[in-house]
Amino acid sequence: MTVAPTGAETSKADCPQLPTTLTELVETAQRCEAAGAAMVHVHIRDDDHRPSLDPARLADTVAALHENTGLVVQLSTGGSVHDPLDSRLAVLDAEPDSCSLTMGTVNFGDDVFMNPWGFICELYQASQDKQVVPEFELFDLGQVHSLARLLRRYGLPYGGRVHCDLVMNVPGGMDGTADALVAAVAALPPETTSWSATGIGRSTLTVALAALSKGGHLRVGMEDVLTLAKGVPVEHNEQLVTRAVELGRLAQREPMTPAEARELLGTR
Ligand code: KMH
Ligand code: ZN
Image (cartoon, rainbow, N blue to C red):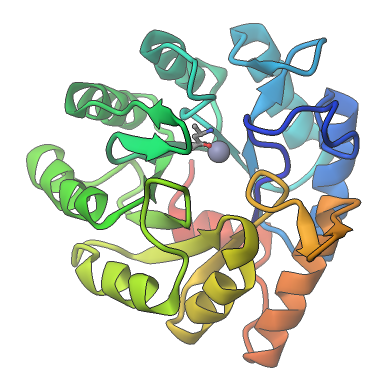
């Protein structure tokens, strides 16, 4: 189970319960770990709660999460749609256990989330050099195909495992439906050793249930959904983790411990 507690798209003004400070992030991570999360997918904010890729702040965040939790720490290299590619590459210098690595450019609501092929190749090789395990973020079927191409060209990731995350229902990406999930899972390259899925917005439960049915792992969190039901806001990320753990238990799937997740992913 991965928790993605903050993201880069929601403002603190619109959602004061979003964890944007380091203190809030660490408290969130601790409570989510206790609830069953094994990995945290991290976007940080500056003192004004705006998305940031400040190198020192990223390094401090990784250190604080390692000090205060046992979670696998995954830094986002996606950042916000406005972040330049060189700042996104430099994220790896903060020495996270894992990094997100999106396999192609995708329309993102009214914006464009830029991931040109050259950037993907550079980021991937940097992750191999720096011993950071990538999580391949797949927003559509074309990106699944690109992953096979990347692995053919550059070999396996650091750690020898291939872990993917299907990010579904972004306006511009694949649908958040069971049918789309089945198609994407069927197209994953044979090197894939594990995958998770997350459904943005109201697709969150559909995608979680479909992922559990297909043997996948789950990502939940306020990066992806801000309501528990129509008109019921999420007050704390822990609620989303707890609900996902309950869904898993109904499917007789126990959440992995962080140690088991490290083994699964091959982190250093
Ligand atoms: N904020 C999105 C533009 C990632 O973390 O790698 C990109 C994103 C993906 O959230
Ligand atoms: Zn993200």
